[in-house]
Length: 313
Length: 324
Image (cartoon, rainbow over all chains, first blue to last red; front, side):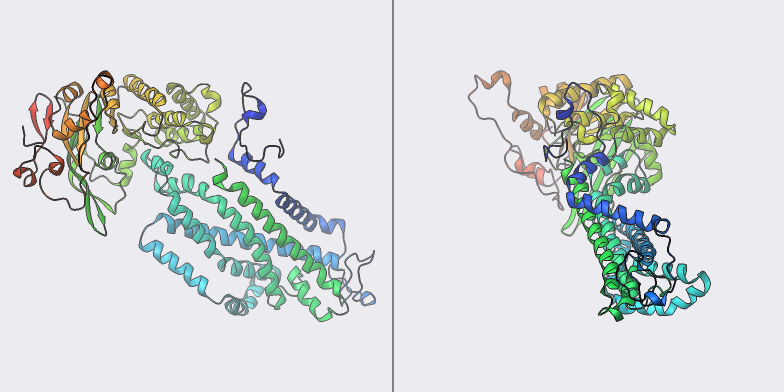
């Protein structure tokens, strides 16, 4: 049934009216539409491979990330160093694998923070009328109008050292960066969720649930939220991409992870002084960021088409 | 007479808008006895639905407000009740079926999950038992092959089927009163007849009372025992169904009945169908007097000065008009 009848949602036609048609859940419908979107499917596969690569990489390429070898400085790709080496002769493939873990983890965790904060604030705002709604949206506008980069730099300067001292360099900076990105990116999600809530709240099925004795919490959690999730999922994928870019920006400015914890952004930062002699050093992490963000964007595109309720019927 | 199941006394629900107060329901008196079908008719915007929603306390407040009156449910006034107490009355005591079956079901859950949710919520039974009860309810509303259909999603059902599902959901906790708010308006005529038949059948089976809100006189004639005619937020006439159709008293009711095409005389009578002249008055800060006065051919001076009360003029036949 792959793609022969592009717009027909009927399942009965293929299985025959006399046979019992299998119940089609909305998830299956969405998956069917998603598969049609070639680029999105390609994006999902590339992302999957990357995730697999950074998780399993250290076992397949068991080279330490910090083994210094001055005889092999700034070498281009070769068999012993497939991605070349940096100015200390450290193996770049190993550093890329390690950095990928950090960059992807930052993307996903920062997105989760942004989405959770955004959904909660948006939901509270959308379901309550009047002053609470106005106050929350005022806060969102406030956050939107803050000059983000200078503030970020300030926050990181203020808290980096103390966090490093108490939780350790890697975990401390990870938490700091993820929280900072998260709290600067919840506003679009909150506005999206609020808008969805405002329209869904008046839908007949919510009214019906209320007429059948559902409490406000139940109406929100069981009836409104699941219907509002489609656009949120799409926004979330875009947020992952944005968070990865944001992290590389921070690292590029030297405010992200320290050199002994390479993320893709940090690798770019380290590479910038040697662009003339060791182009590969910047190309690989830059390419990885580019490919990841592009894949995520296409994935989001595909999800938007697949989850669009207007296409359900 | 025994205590009525539901008795609405002098109910006024107003809505605050930027232009002033909308008197959507403006002094409604109604009573429903156990096991009885009360038809509520009137044209669009006369307050039928707002009355029903007020009884369920589903009117958004603000902007809505119950300005006056009592809603006595088995003698207990629902007006002062808080949201928690109202929740336990909804579905278990009074249930409502809406006009729009196409959008009244949540598209992300199978219909079985939605019916079972109501059963679990109000009866505190486990998943297994709730599923069994759900299948039993689907059987009662004549959905074929309920064991399999229970897992289907709303988009796999037609309008009539969805309305059956809505009825199953509303009745799953055996309410004593079902408010059916134009349950057949969105459906075509044959399905309409089937749904009305189903409602009648289930009413007998459960011994519940039905408040049937509609603007179709034909539907009322077939299903109701008593009829209340509403006009501009007030009940203008209330009578047993036979008495109302045989001798309508209020000029508005007379106009309504004359405006129904008659199959038996249409072929021989070459008259145009009569319409009621004029339009429904604005409910925004309405003037005193009878609301129908502006369109009434019997209107006199007193009609625009005093509001006639609803009085019993024949046995069981009440009307609010100065003519009687």
